[in-house]
Image (cartoon, rainbow, N blue to C red; front, side):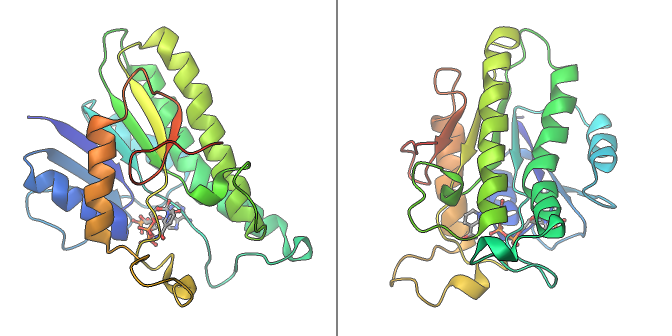
Length: 232
Ligand SMILES: NC(=O)c1ccc[n+]([C@@H]2O[C@H](COP(=O)([O-])OP(=O)(O)OC[C@H]3O[C@@H](n4cnc5c(N)ncnc54)[C@H](OP(=O)(O)O)[C@@H]3O)[C@@H](O)[C@H]2O)c1
């Protein structure tokens, strides 16, 4: 039976977990709380997303065929996306980095120590189009953009190393398109009709890209929700 680890059980993470489980995958879903997604899932509750807690969770699991990291933060009670550079703070930058980069980094570090030369793992981390530097025409959202750009670089750099060490593995970062979730809720008003995906629609697109587009030949790419490639 094919298997997948899904880190982060928010809207998109849970919808992908359900879809993968319905298609016969053995799914391990890691989140800070248990969610009513499907009884077939192996749900693991993680104390926090700190580096050492992530490693401790993963150590007990057999290496899967696929890994998806869905963690991300754009805003919180204490942090709003910046409109200008003056609004930046140490706290918002560190929180953004922690949520948007460190979970993927801890996961990749852990996998790098356990994979073998003939391992065959497909890895995807959810990024965002606003993390593309060359596509940035609007500015704003400094901490989120910076951390997603760093995430893309982390995935690309790891892909180069893995091509040498684990040539049958593949990695990608991915833009899901604007999707209804807590993360996007405050920013949905100005969207044109039809621009907002449900989490289930987003999951269908993501699974198609994960299963069919992330290969050793494309490893390191930033994929758009429809399978096309975005510029860094
Ligand atoms: N929704 C969109 O329009 C949109 C657009 C572009 C990119 N994305 C990206 O898509 C991914 C999934 O987002 P979503 O829309 O499904 O949002 P969501 O429902 O708010 O889920 C957010 C996820 O991030 C995790 N998380 C929250 N705070 C964290 C922290 N401080 N440290 C580490 N992890 C934390 C949560 O973990 P728990 O499971 O433990 O709660 C949850 O799994 C994110 O990476 C986001 O940046 C979303």
